Image (cartoon, rainbow, N blue to C red; front, side):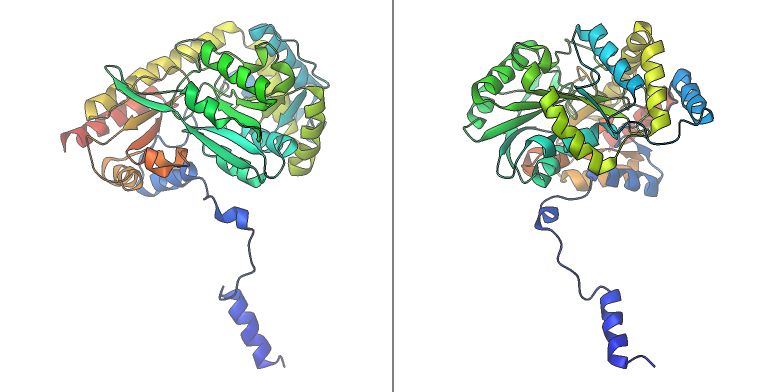
Length: 410
């Protein structure tokens, strides 16, 4: 018969009274607030404008290609860094859009989404103690990614302005310049930007490039929304003078083809950096789903310019519907120049903090945003902000607008 004391010890451990020590790095950041708000939306049966996934179908060409790949038994490991077919499709895409000469065998790595791409790339390049400049507001993964590398993030807040067009965020070049030092190893830049919708201008990108060259820094650019553009131009940082050899360009299929659950992203980087990235990627995930790589390649090969034009035009219409609804409800916001989010100031509607306000919206109004502070390291900078995603059906956004009127009437 087991010893009673042993049974007691097992009981204490299983009930959680005693816990093994966890890594200090995990105490510095939280789980995703965006995905938490999806759970809040489901709990209240609210319209989910928090997480950036479409509620409409992917292109038929991609779905048919995915089914075809599975039927052809493309079900085993692809080449770790991506099948030859998708790497060629990526190379041809960059040549078509930007006249950019990319070597598909030595400079392209296919990853499990752009999220894994950023983590793998930072782990491959950044050493513990290196300074990494992160512009805020930022997509919530960037801070934890830097921390997991043991890096020291240096936060650069964008300038917040209010004009006749509404709330806007622009890059303060003087503040950015002051953030660079002899310890700066890298900068993380997202354009078109999540959550602000800001599209970094050629002048802003040239300023970033000049700082990288001056300080021998590597730029990590998240360009996942490159084809969701309404105003301005998308300027890949790697296309600027002296930047191809020091830029890690990240993108993927999730947003362009409305397949956020497929987890097919990619990295384009100089061969030497790519070698290091592939080592990290291999041991993190082995590889992205093989049949879905084939399907994304098929989409890139067969969908012409008219698809990309329609993508931006359709999102422009969605943007305008949500922006109108938010303005009518009393939010201060401007139409974004790119991506599919609106970051809105709710201070004229409530003196609550952003978490309380976002949850009350889900519960009482039936529309769920993301608390703005989750996009800032300096949390107080986002306490009067919430982010809405408009990658939804027109009827979803129109219904959200009707519900938002109730908020404005209170």
